[in-house]
Amino acid sequence: QVQLVESGGGSVQAGDSLRLSCVASGRTISWYAMGWFRQAPGKERAFVAAITYNSGATQYADSVKGRFTISRDNAKKTVYLQMNSLKAEDTAVYYCAADATRGLESAMNKYDYWGQGTQVTVSS
Image (cartoon, rainbow, N blue to C red):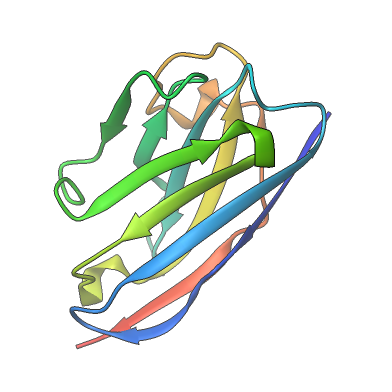
């Protein structure tokens, strides 16, 4: 089992930055690919970014390319999402997830473990 806890969310102005963290406990996540998803009010949960187990590759949703960066520190069992140039449309609950297949996945059903989410609110 893997337990995931997100933090770092908050309320910011458009153009600001935030860094989300996702700390894992239980089984090591060193062999898991990791992803970030978000769910805006009234919308379905959507893919944001993913990273392979060894940080060899990353993938981003088109809406966040060039603004968000996913990274990980396996020694700290932590995955990060650096969010720059935030926009009002980035407002959502952000979730991290772990995928045992190790590769890059954007589909929710590929992920085995999920955190509870952290709220990000961007005011324009």
